[in-house]
Length: 286
Ligand SMILES: [Zn+2]
Image (tube, rainbow, N blue to C red; front, side, top):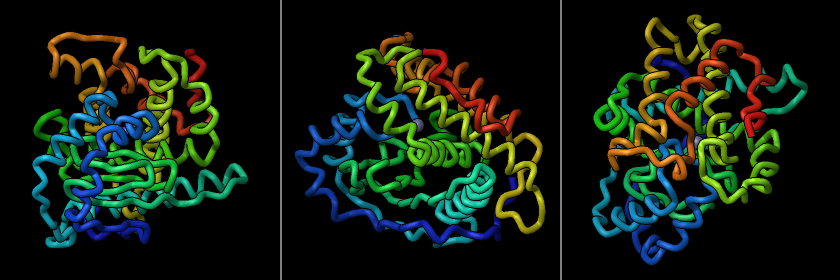
């Protein structure tokens, strides 16, 4: 994947970190609720998120990062990828007679505030439908590489495209519709929560389909051989079953929120191969 020198998005905010610790203090309950309504990319349960928020809070040293400190920084990368999603979704929406309202992206380090509540880096990237923002601690890219063995720029791009996928769901009214239905009590592999996540993977695949087609000089991102495999590898690595095996040594389907590795790869691939938004009805499986 080539992206250096690509056009950057105007919709990125940079948080210097720090200063939010006090507000997150005692935010354990809030974080638990937030876990139910925000959309993470990893399969953490709200309890885990709660735990992690507290842990992040207790170790409250904040590092202020200059996101543009060096050429090729993670901040620049995220901004270029977001720009690419804007180009593609804008044209897809227009082709369907719709208007694409671009999401914002907030890059942070450590902890930050969102309209959905406090956020910590340990939660992984997420989308908050209340403020239409993607929250991303760029250190997650290191985690993807080191902890989940899913390295590569395109694996990182997939993560961003997945969060944008949640914004698409918001714009199309799916978030609201499914939110009303999601009190299904279950967190199993066929719960509404999982279908929402798989659809975001599908939209990430649709994005990859057009990103590849648009490979040309004036495009922010150029996809190369091996990129799709890197994204599939990431989808595979952060499936709930894999995460659970890593953390607990066994699989507990009841705790699934994002879908199994197989499901995630299936839907990303389907979006990538078809490029057809209408084929992303993951809810049919209910
Ligand atoms: Zn998600």
